[in-house]
Image (cartoon, each protein chain N blue to C red):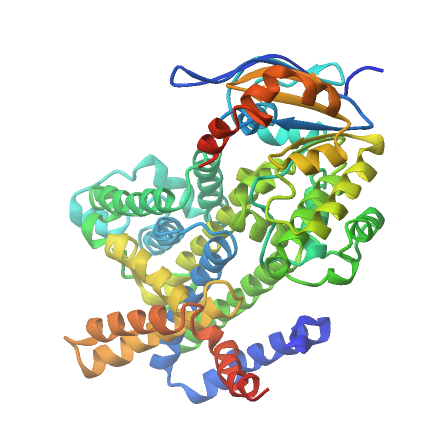
Length: 355
Length: 251
C-alpha cells in the first residue's frame, strides 16, 4: 500500500490503468462491448466527482444528473446543429424541430454551431452553476439530509423542465447524431476513438482527484467533513472549501455527460432525473466513497452488473441490484475498496486471541 | 497595559430568556483568567458570544476593533481561539495534519492545492510544547482524551491566537494530566490572554491568576482567588452554604 503513496507508485498505477484501458480492453472486447465500456467509463467519471464531494467532503450529492444533463444537452445541441448545417447549410433547423413544426431556430441554439463555444459552455456553465448554488447553500450552513434532499429535488425539477421544452426535444430528448466534430459516428474506428477519449478523460479526472486528495486542500476538505465548526473556529470559511469540491464534481459530471452523448447516441430527461442520479451514487457507495478508485470500481461494477443481469433476467435485475446494495451497506460499509482492510482485520483477530 | 480583549455589557437572549445579562470582562495578556459559576451561569454562552456563535448586544473589542457582528471565521482570524467542552479535533487526520490545517488559515489557494512538503517550523515546535512530538503521524481519533485536549490547544497556538478561550480543558482528565495542563496554560499565557471556563475548584485555586464568578448571567464577583473565595455572595451561591443548590443545578 505504501508503494502506491509514493510518486513512482502513482506513475506505475496510472501506467497500469492506461495499459488496461488503451491496450487490453480494445484487444479483448468486441466493438459492441467496447461501446458499452465507453458508456460505463462516463459513469465512472461522474463517480470520481461524487467520491470527492461525498466521500471526502461529506456532501451527499443526490442530484449529479443535473450537471451530467447540462454537459450532455450542451453537447447534443452542438451535434444537432452540426448535423443540420451539414445537410441544409448554415442556420438550418435541426431535424427534430422540423418534425415538431418549429421553423425558426431558437436564438439560444445559434451559438452552439461553434464547437469552441460549446466546449467552453460544457466546462463553464455547470461549474458556474455549482459555484453559485454551493455558495447559496453552504453559506447558509445547509448540510446533511437537507442538502441531499435539495440536490435530489433539483434533479427532479431539471428533468421536468426539460420534458416541457419542445425546442430541446421534450420527453424524447435529443438523438440520432451523425457526426462528432466532423467524424462519422457510424464508423467503428470513430466509435473506438470515442472510447479512447472517455478512457483518457477518466485518467485525467483521476489525476486531478488524486492531486486534490493529496494536497493541503484535500486534508482541509476531510477536516470540514468531520468537524465543520472546528474548521470555522480556526479561521477558515468552510463554505468556500465545500464549494470547490462541489464545483469540481459538477465539472466532472458535465464532461462525462458531454462524452456520453456521442457514445450512446441519445440524451433524454429519463437519463438525468432522480433515478439516474441515485444510480450514480449507488456505484460510489458500493465501490467505496472515501477512496480514489472505489467510486470507479463501483460505477463500473454496477453498470456492468446491470447490463449482464438485464440480458439474462430482464425482469429481475433490479432486485439483484437492490440486494447487492443492501449486502454492501450491511457487510462492507466502506464499499468494495475496503475488502482488503476488512480481511486483514479478520486474519489478525486469531493472532491477538493467541497472544 | 491595555486589555487583550475587553467585553462590555454583553447580553445574550434566547427567546426572551437572558442567558447572559450585562457582563463586563477584561482579559489581559500574561494572565490565566478563570470563569467559574454554577451550571447555567452563562459561561459557555459568553464564550459563544465572543467567538461569534451566539448573537448578543454590547461590545467586544480587541486591538481597538469592534468584533460584534463579524462572522465566526473572521473573529478567529483576529486571533481569538476557542476549544469546546468535548475536544473537537479532526479524528481521521494525523496530529501533524491537524496542526498544519490550524496553522494555515491564511494560505493562498495555490499553496492549498499543492502537497505539503514539510511541516512549518512553528508546527513542530508546538508539537513538542504540547507533548505530542512522537505522535505526529498518529490519527487524532486514537489519541487519549487528555492528548486530544492538548492537541486542540496546540491548534490554537499554531494559528497564532493571542486570546484563548478554553471550555473545560481538564474535563475527564486524571490528576497528572491536570497538572500538566495547568503548567501548559501558565506557559502559553506568558504572552497571551487565556480564559478558562471550569468547574473544578482545586484546579482553579492552583492555576488561576484572576477569577470571574458568573451567576445567573451576571458577574457576581471578580478578583484574585482569595478575594473571590472570601466574598460572602460567592460562598452563598457556589462554594459553601448553598452547595446543595449548586449540586442540584449540576444534576
